[in-house]
Length: 295
Image (cartoon, rainbow, N blue to C red; front, side):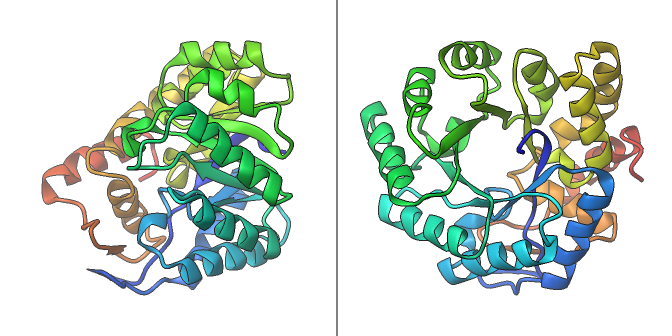
């Protein structure tokens, strides 16, 4: 149900940069239709790329609910519901279940640096409190918290925990987690640049930033890798490598929103403390778009 190219979708906003830039639900509908047409297999609403850190809890729940309504069951919706407060994560996860999300994505608690036992207790408590499929999310580069493979393997035995998004780009972890979990435990990449090799090492897919702007190519690359077609997967990925890198020239989602604006899919809107892309990086991003043949 949650394999292949899954998009970590942006949260479109009306033009402007400010602390409360208005959300743009018409653009969200446009993006959802774009992804369904282009072969994206599922949508993650209000993850890191969706600016979860700067949305209010009310807005957070509203974006999930509206995404579910707009998708109309055509592909799964995964709601980003992680927080560095266990009680807040529970509240967001309950909201996601109530509005009909198919699963939740829960990032490791950021800033407060829990121990491995703290991570285990945090995720176990949420999974036992709300009956909805839950995917762990490990991204130490943004959270300053690294959930080790041993902890992930331990959590894999907890009811409702169905997989992990692993964003360390360490492919040895894929093999270690796969060896320690059942075959139906999902292993999803959180690093576009290493996704091809992640899948070929035993992974099931990716929750992708690049898929925001090149969904068809990401989908085809994932399918090829899942089928073991190394040559075709590599051929497609070669065209995307520039985007994989350029979309992180500034903090995500600054570059990806710039590209989506250039593609005519969203307005140039973002919330502080994120700012609009610096002119210094525009040429690099545009060249990556040309390499990927999306412009």
